[in-house]
Amino acid sequence: MTNSINPNFKYAALIIFIFSLVSGQAMGQPFRMRGNWYLGSQFSIVSFFGDLSVHDFNPARKLTEESDFAWGLMAGKSINRLIGARIYYNNGHMRGSNQDLDMYFSNDFNEYSIGATINLSHWIKPQKDPKFDLIASSGFGLIYYRSIKYRISDGSFLSSEGYTSEKNPSGKASSALVIPVGLELNYIPGNNWMFFIGFSFRLHNQDLLDSHIGSTGIGDRYSVISIGCSYILNPIKKKPKQKIKGAPESF
Image (spheres, rainbow, N blue to C red):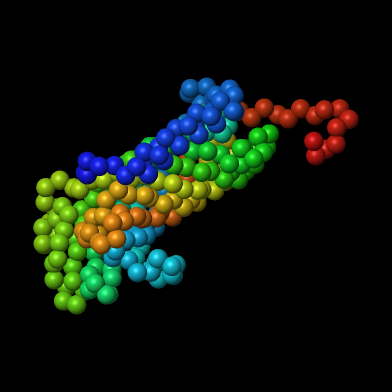
């Protein structure tokens, strides 16, 4: 892992911490410690953005030519009605190519991260309990990866990170910092189950996910589109809404 950390990563982490702190105070009483824990899994499509990608503005070709699959696990807790904490694990693959450079690559990765979630639906309408919740999330973590690069014209080996030229693992996997920033839509049909679809973008502080250092000085990035479900342990019981005599039905 590189010893230098992009200042943008430091600023993002500081903003996440301050916003979570202020939001937690704004929502008042936190949930009890043993309540509203959840465990979940997800299936994802991972799209690479870097020097060995050329379809960044063509969604159809991005998904078919510069995307691959991943699966993941998560565990988290709702701290109060607005904020939560979460840990993630993702395992998957990336791929991409650039005809002008006559290069293509593939990699395998494991990603570990921790983050905070903000319930935007409760932020906008604090008194409502909708079945659909819009969630913003961010955090920080580490990605461990092995990548290998070939020439398109003849399939010859060019370079690698953590592989031999025969694509056998060699030494330790490369690692780097990663900051996920995303949105997800949760559907909560009852007390214990939550289904979600989400999109997040991974900011990355190195330029070797594709085993290629470009001339722009911009690190590689990748996006993750996920669909999954979670099981909520010890869900918080919702208090029945008390009817105020004489008030309209919509009150």
